Length: 441
Image: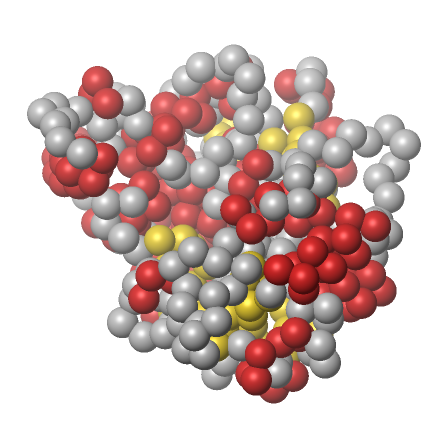
């Protein structure tokens, strides 16, 4: 088994993470990526680990669920997290990256690794031997057809992308720089406030705007963490003020109290481009330009990228996968990334890293044992391969943790979460030490 080449399909976050881990541990890996020969509706380059939506990898707060996952991935030497740290840009409490620098660095590390062969071709089905499918939510039609034959069911949701604007075109006379609740060492966000009248004028225009139509056979199913702003606004005229346009925690230096605020987050280290945070949309391009320019700070803004929407595919992992992320019908075929029903960059990387760990266990002929449920990695895996009832994509949140797996959880919410975070990283270290001992790493 150790002499059989390992094939990984998809050079996104999960595939790149898995390929690098296995190569670093002495295995020859063929990493297959169909771009640029065949592009997806969302990707713009052939680079490994291209970020197509936000450039944020979420909170660095050590007692947040994303922060707990970061701590564990950092302990395991995650390629994605290490490179994100290297390519980071100011984003307050969040870890955000210069997306081009990030993808270029990942690509260079993959391309120059002696035990990784990067092959640009479209794969239609798994290879003989060990294959890890990490093609993501934009899996090609041919491979999707193979998946449908295996699963006998299709699951999907719609994901939307937020616009990016040219920094020099933002009117700073109507904006201010600050982090929410002043978190983070440096102010990183450009805040675009709206008065009550301006907000309602914006909402009225948004609700009446033309949207890109779905096909007749399609149903508008959105992942709850990435809903288009027009879908949020349709739930009620105040809904955006309690979502991506919430004004709480932001103080305008002019002394005015904003009724609503759009935040802009830097896209690159040179800060020449900013992302409209939470403004995913399926409005037509013309309507985006017209309506978003109703926000005072953006009245003459130039768009580097407009928002869009695309269909994401994912499998019902609890029904189809073993606890080691291998396919029940074909145990030599493994899955990782958003295709398994996790949502988020680091969540995808985490499943890629875990799948690589499990593949190495198989190759070494040692027993399968996974990160325990009282770790962030284990909680994510438990979601992915556990209960099947109403399985939907999920981010790394505290809702994935089962408190019964932890001990001595007392006090207020912050104390409980602080205790869980401390226990989780220690439990992860114990598991990782045992993993290395059994695999003789």
